[in-house]
Length: 256
Image 1 (cartoon, helix red, strand yellow):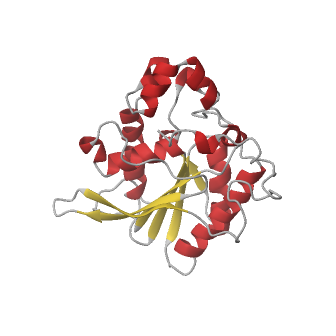
Image 2 (tube, helix red, strand yellow):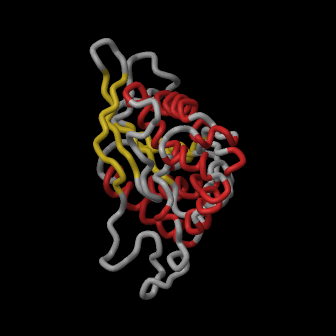
């Protein structure tokens, strides 16, 4: 593959994909950089996400996918399923790892709200309450994420597409950095992360002075599923499946 951009080349498009569901998602726990695998629902989602991405953007396009993943297992598992369909390898990049949430990682959202009401409330209001507990700054996540995406997006030309498999907070903060929304709103409150197994897609363009321009064409897009199937609990029988009975994830704040 060509090296870093020296001739103004860019890939045709960039798609940022969130990993499938995990046991922490189902239990309403904050993951951050805790390295846990997909659960059964997450594996089911990853298969359908891979198929949807392949059918929509790769099959018959004439473009070759470049697949990059966070080193965390849940992202790698999701990326591998797509890469296998596309017949390419996965490149792992540390810059694509999820935001660190410090000592809050692995805690239930409900416990954080009870034990740290002031800081948790500040976090929900985008006032950085999590920073008092060792979290990585959103601006740092956005910077490293944007650097990674820009790097990979300029390693090949229009006959390639870039697919980056990562995490909710990382996608939120990276997308806002790429689009300069962090300048308009430095709290990074403008865009939340996509749902599990969903993605955000950009066309990559160049301005007259050669700078990269990121045009968002899809947000929180995901695979279609059969009527009556719950994306977050496909094995449910009348709403009593593996993940749904005590699932608190829907009640937590948007991916911050």
